[in-house]
Length: 161
Image (cartoon, rainbow, N blue to C red; front, side, top):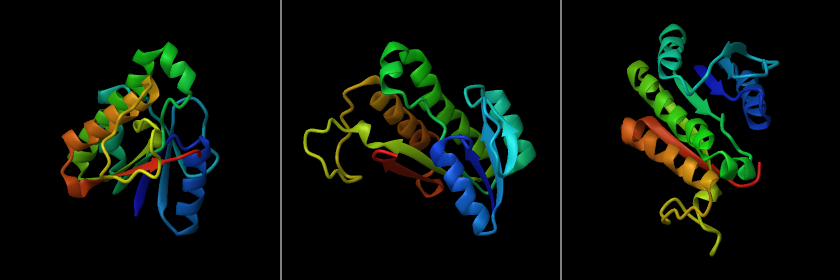
């Protein structure tokens, strides 16, 4: 299977690339600033819709695992436009390109989409983010759901990577 891992030079992306390579998958490791060590590197600015579509038309991934994100919670509060560009608009761009290529998308999100009042949340609980990071990640989830049919995506909400 040909898998495009976004944010492949980050902590989570790098580990996913390693695991996928061990299982014999062909991996395209996309990055914005730091070239990943493993997989076939692909420079990709996910906030640029035409760049994403062009890359997908050349690569034709079977699946995408989106680990790219602006994860600095404090910076998201200070720079909400950048947070929404990185965590929401980029997901919409990925989803549109995935739709054209008939690619499955795994969106790595966060438990910050919840308010933290209760804990032990399930996918059926109503999200209630309390900061810009959580709001932007929830907007990314919604962009994915808006662009793709349900059988073409999965959302994984992580807690402390």
